[in-house]
Length: 439
Image 1 (cartoon, rainbow, N blue to C red):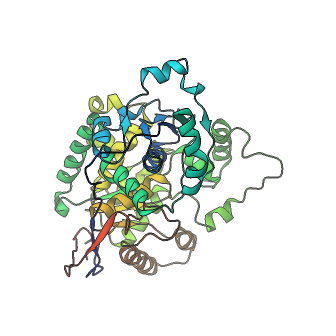
Image 2: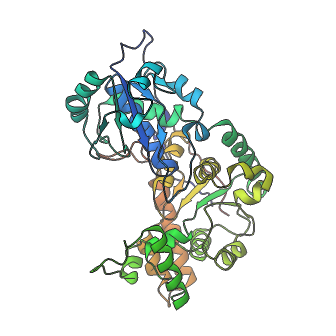
Image 3: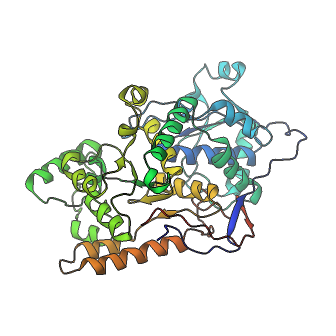
């Protein structure tokens, strides 16, 4: 049985991000500073949108600042995560990018960027807003700041501006040398550890860290100890958010709605039901799993060839990345990007960017399993279900993901998840590509 069997005749796509014809950029209208907030991939959204806005306004983009997030707790700067030189060089024909503001401008604002006028832009603002409201201020002051900046530009923009998003995300943003160097080693080691499946492996993004379990308000063991532990975790991370007067939390409803994080056991059962046996090589991308010793045991038993960045790399190799969640996430991202099958279990920016990036690399097919968690909840909670029935349901779910692997961006959809047709063009090909990772 092959993992991906859907015949894609005439459905293969190739990247088509052409550069602006040489002839030089027009005189800049001024400088734009943005502050990228959130984790690794929310920051990536901010960066790509900032490139698009700079192109729209014919402005010079200053390398974005990263906002220190109380949850992510990562003080990394742009150059710690991405290759600044490659970023600037890749965009040089389309958007001017500089590492910092010129000395004379900094002196004007007493060398304090917080003194620069900060534009409060609403989420998903259209192009017309930037042209009518932001551009005049930019021309008046010569420099403006937009903070916060996540999702401050509409999904629907002219093709020339959408192309800048594509260029920034898929070509200009490359991980910094320390990250890329170790990530490449991890990919090679994962391929080497997957000899039973011709070097092919599955990557699973498992969101079962303590903060994710706490935030979901789902019940697992259901005991008093778990309740006290989760109440304390919620208070630490989101003071007062979950115990406001009048707020009612219904864990059973949340689970039926498919919003509970899958446990390692549930992920293992799903994959075995889909046809992946115990010879399957799995790379697990995750943070620190909640009650890892107990919860990971069944998954490791079902898939003894399971690896993580901690098992693939030595403590000495990982030491420079410890305490930097975005840098660790970048390692996971790279190993997942090059897997034969990517399995997402909880949604969020990480899998959404990966699905788009995989489509860009793999001729339009995401090669991703995104399970129907509402259906999974019903199946897992049915005490009378037989294994054969469960297997049929799982294999139907896998086939559905194969068919949906190639999907075009719809109105208001994200070009970072659906790069076709904005970043890719159709290539006629009658070839059927299959992989023998499922046995």
